[in-house]
Image (cartoon, rainbow, N blue to C red; front, side):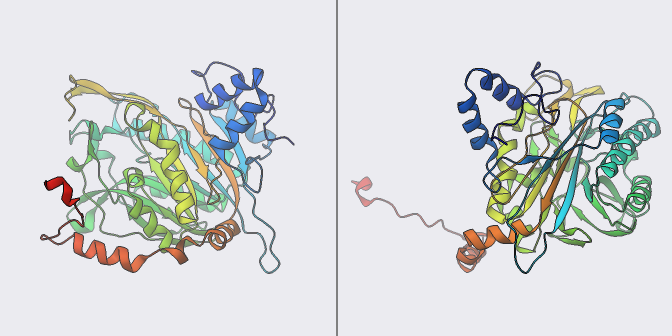
Length: 411
């Protein structure tokens, strides 16, 4: 097999308009390869890296799963990361699934109708994931509802909030997890009834037996443009928990946390092997950053990252204003999808499309995490005691930056 995947392979983007189901990067590379195949091969290597010396491999699609995806109008892609064989450890093979999707009903429809329509869509996608042998699957941020946080309105939107343990979405996914022997990461809007019915941006971790392993919350809350989420919830106080599951140690860095390198680092130091980044972000704000941040986190912290972003443009009944001076409008912009998986060896999969529902599956060997740690020694060569000392000083009110001035500038 060559480094440039076959143009006829259904698991790669086909030669068609970038505005249909295709990832725009894949479309551009495929067009380039028609005239400059060697240059396209090199470009793929630069953009996607190499896993054990080659581009990430395609994973064969189950025919019935492929048909189910086609019947329900969502994209299905599957890839495979490998690790070097070892003498004393067997491969630790895990299949990761990422779901990106649009909402179904208009946002002026009853809350119950909106939620059930999304649940029905998600159920079909999870069933396909099960056909493909997925072990751990992650849904997008606030998957149960439209991303209404731009509106700054409390009603009717907070009716989407639910208990992390007793809520309807948790009960639904507990049934799915138990049926399919699958760990499910469910990012929801939580109402914490034990603490004054406070609202949180939360991810519930559901075990393969349908049990609730635990929950984590969004550590960093954006205050940029239309993203005024602190109107609804504040920063997590739960730290950086890592959840030991049947399929490895996983963590969840929700959305805006991907912009904070120390946030990523903490999950790694707590032993994460897979970190999910369920998000809801729009092209005008963050798309140039999307392909960089999670891949960099994989490299720096020696774990796999599953980056999930919703798709579509969501219109709300009432216009709202931004923090950037734009005229009042009724939508956040286009959520650009492009979900992908990145690995600790700097390789990554191509992304799902910008504008279609999709399921991305990646088979990984978790042994790669330790192998890359041993190669690069990032943790061994880090200077945590120096960083800790600096940060301890930085948070003091009388902190003075360590700046050494050129005395000649005073003359």
